[in-house]
Length: 85
Image (tube, one colour):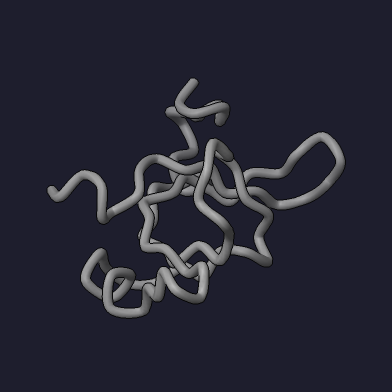
């Protein structure tokens, strides 16, 4: 299990690590609804599209994963501006 997401070794395409811009206030939340997440092609694209003044933050996420309520969720791996890799 990684960040609340069960990974299936036989079907890695179902849940993937992706770059994204998350539209939400930063805090202790570790998962975000699909409508708050804009998946982009690269970390550079995420950092370029981020706008902290507008609550848009570059992140590495895992997902989408379907919740028990039927929502598609993305789980935060890390905020890109906190851990430069």
